[in-house]
Image 1 (cartoon, rainbow, N blue to C red):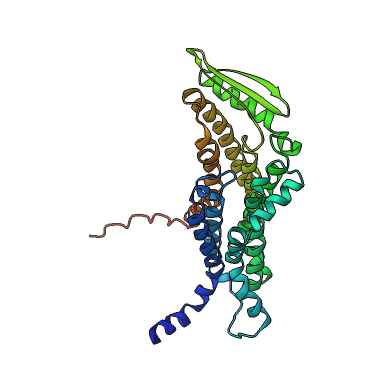
Image 2 (cartoon, helix red, strand yellow; image 1 turned 45 degrees about the horizontal axis):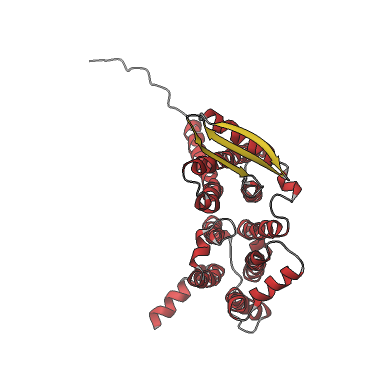
Length: 342
């Protein structure tokens, strides 16, 4: 017992930092046990919550010793009294949503307000509530600096919830601001399919472009899909923009370097979206079953790139500094040969 207490005392600072991470690990595990299939979906699923956990861990690693939690050794202080219940709020929300009828109430209220995808509103609300609870937790634990340091995972979770809500209220490409970029994306996807040897045609179906791809060698191999902004990967561009801007803002590099990093990352994200659409049509021509790729593997490509890009930036900066230090070291001038006096 004494050894356990001494270990806790020795690693108190590190353990306190991990409390917000643990506060969400428990409800996420519970949700997985309740609805494991929901973690197999990127769009309108909970796979994004796993990336949220990854982003928290990444921030803890990057912050190092600069992030110091508030001490909670005074059990009756206002911050301690507020912080300890806040750690339980995510789990309590899961209990309320799945056992006390909260999800049912959200769905019924959405139907009364004539929201088209009312059944998806509980998941959207879950993301938004978790984002708000995480901000509360971080503020109580780390103060205003914590909100700044953990802005990326908090905004990431909030944006996902907001995008889900927008699509629930304005489905099938009805949200015009997000749909503006889709025709260009569909046209570029058609060009990519043409380069692969397929024949394509573009039409308009309401607010959405309708793309048809056919294999000229086998006209029976054909696929036609209407493309809305979630299908075109607009959500990944929005998530990349927020995550990249928040991350680059914290880096002590020149604004020219920040613009270059952002431009390269956005271009790669957009290209991935184009290739994702092209892949959906290729799968559709072969099997017709595109659901798994459309809702999981396709978005996974973009999100995996987005969450790994900050690591690539850090790696390139480390490599650049090593090269700069190596080039800045003075070279020794060669000494003239000494005369042989023997």
